[in-house]
Structure formats: structure tokens, C-alpha cells
Image 1: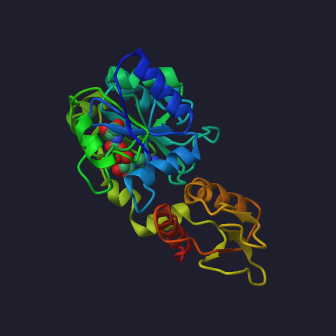
Image 2: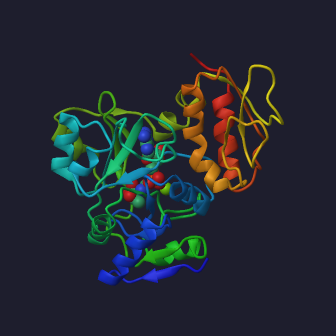
Image 3: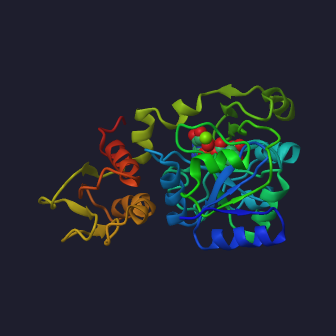
Length: 315
Ligand code: TXA
Ligand code: MG
């Protein structure tokens, strides 16, 4: 894939909006760092984000929106969210809110959880693209997994050139570190220190923040298992279903109740993963057998999630 560089003018933004509408990825400037943006409602686009970054697992991503009104279509709003958004949006603050049932976001963007991270970025180019595309933009930092967050378009190109459709050139980022992340799913909790000082947030709330590391919030295996596991027991690498099992296929597995991708496409499979697990659960499956998934590219992230879902439940 040839990665285009788009100028931060009307034509460049229109071209970026068209790529987003087509499910492609565009690296965009924000005031914190460059983000790798795709339509958060489009499962294949979100899957491509993980593929382009070479992420071995699916972490939940921040969904970028124009303003508090747009945020309310995805997350359950509350007084504290209102106060913080009034004080600091647009800006380097991300709010984790309960996910609305009718949000319409790809479950891959929230990693199948029932909360969503939302941020209204301040950068004029990011705002122009949000307006032109009309899409909520899932955007992690635009670097290869494990790499350093990019604050210039050249950094993005070094890591992702040839892997994404375009880079929208907005020059260097002002803030240079990622947004501060606050969870408002219970008592207000700091998940990640970042571009907005904690003191300013505590002043606006008139309350102290509880502390929890983003890692323990998201990647503690126990928590992961309880978040992602379906009610059914799961057996992986199954060639066919045994008595009483419902088969989740890959690549057109014969006898599968659902198939992650009949054509064996890992991007399609990643986009379908959480949806299919939910659907089998809702259908009352008590035991799910999952066909083997190739362990390369996005297959590694799919297998990581499947192993967590199959882990013994801690509740
Ligand atoms: O400044 C930023 O925030 C940049 C720019 C591009 O906006 N974005 C960014 O995204 O840093 P990313 O994907 O690299 O970081 C997302 C962080 C992850 O550490 C993840 O754990 C947390 O947000 N996160 C996302 N959704 C969450 C959720 N539902 N609950 C808790 N944490 C969440
Ligand atoms: Mg990052």
C-alpha cells in the first residue's frame, strides 16, 4: 500500500474523510500525539488499526468526537462528565463512561467491554476531519506497537509508511504526551496521567481522584476474563464440535453455527469476534468450540482474546 501525505487544507481533509468513509486508516494530528484514525463504527476499519500497529492483543481504543453532544450518543453522560467536558473539552482529556447500548460502535473498539473512552481533541485539523467525516474516530497513537508515540508526521511515516492509506500533515503536536484518562464508571478514577494536569481536574471536580493504573484496569488477566468471557465454556483449536457444543468456525468450517470469516480473512474475523461471541451467548450456547485460527497477524490478537475468554472464570 502506498501511503499518501495529505495537506491540511480543504482538499486534504475531504480526501481523508473519503478514506475514513471507505474504512481506510488515516494518521491525524491531535494536540497530544498523532493518532491512527478509523471509523469506530466499522469493525473492519478498527481491525485494520490493530493490524497496522502490529498489536498482538486488542486493547480498547479512544473514540474521538467533536464535542460533548456527540460523546453523549456513545457514553452514558453524568454531571461529572458534564463538568469536566465544559472545563477541558476540546482538549487532552479522555473520559471513560458506561457504553450506551445503542452506541453503534464496533465491539472491537471497546474490546467487548461495557465502557467506552471518549475524547474531543482540540487540534483544528482533527476537528475539521471529525466534522467532514461525521464519524466517531477510533485512534490510538500512530506508531507500531511498542514504539514511541509520534509527535510529527515524519515519526508516523517511519513506523507506518506502506501500512496505512494516508497521513494528514499537521506539523508537530503541541502537547506531545497522550491525554489524561479519567474513568467515570464509578468514583472518578485516574487511569493514565497525561497532557492535562491532575490538579486541574481535581479542582474542576471539587474532589480527589482515585488512582488505578490503566494496565490493572484493562489487562489484569482476572479482570479480562470476567469482562470478555461468554457464559458458555470454551474449547479452542477444535476441528469439529463434540456432543452439546456449538461450533464457531473460521475459513468456512463445516458445521459451524457462525463463522468468523468464511473466506479466512483475519481482518474480517477480528471485526466479527466479539459480535459472534455475544451472539452465541445470547443464543444460549452452553459450550462453544472454536476452530483453529492461524497465529499470525491479527490472528495472534484473536487467539489472545480467545485464550482469555476460555480461561477459568474467577466468579
Ligand atoms: O492523546 C491520546 O489519548 C492519543 C491521541 C491520538 O488522542 N490516543 C491514545 O490512544 O493515546 P491509545 O489507544 O494509545 O490509548 C488508549 C488508552 C489505553 O491505554 C486504554 O487502556 C485506555 O485508553 N482505554 C481505552 N478504552 C478504555 C476503557 N473502556 N476503559 C479503560 N481504559 C480504556
Ligand atoms: Mg500508544
